[in-house]
Length: 183
Image (cartoon, rainbow, N blue to C red; front, top):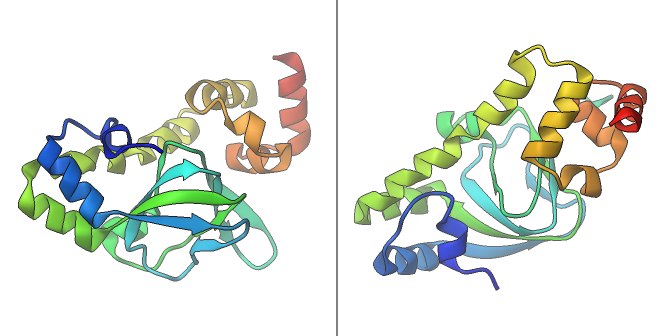
């Protein structure tokens, strides 16, 4: 079983008291394959730390699904624009496989910050969008995109099929297959 200390290690330094507060406010949740964590149009009210399993975050126009993010264990997951702006989500988050998460609601995060300034460190998890920005704002070639995700999220290629990874990288599955064959 992963401890609160391990969950929060990427966020900052927390005292024993802080860890107890976190354990008091965070809840463990189980999702089955294809369960929805957040539906397009809903307002994101929580952040989730993935203990096991994986998730897909996508936009849908009823004909096609465009992959926005692929989430793996030991990552924080949420819809950034919806959570920060408290506006309807433009994406859906769905369990790709059976999964277990730790959920921390925005309400409880605010309570934690009110009780301990250490929880202001949670601002670090809200910078995750920078990883995606780097990937798509730097005019990377398909091979560079693939190398970047292999380095930053090596499990992606073991967990998700080529079609989903290609959609995430905004390249065709055929291009991704060629890139993988040459790596």
